[in-house]
Amino acid sequence: MKDSFKYAKERWDKSHKSPDFKVGDLVLVSTLKFNNIKGPKKLKHPFSGPIMIKALHRPNAVQLELT
Image (cartoon, rainbow, N blue to C red; front, side, top):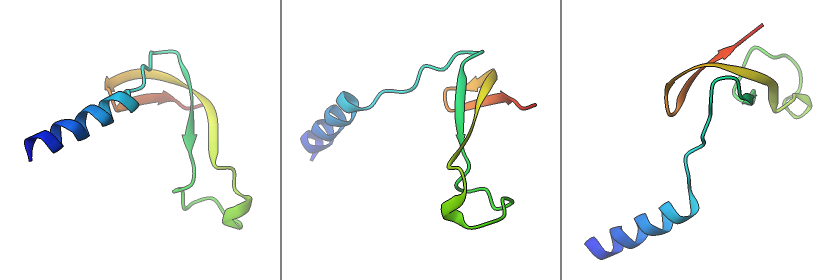
């Protein structure tokens, strides 16, 4: 059992890496889950941006500079 977990972890680690974001980088924000945008779903833009990163709080949590 431990061998299968180890094998799965090695395969995952080989093909996935965490993104290296820095303050000042420009990113796109997904708008697919926004409910406040009116109109047909297929006509909505899937992303908004580019938006600048203002601060890094954790590897998966950033603060964006919204203007």
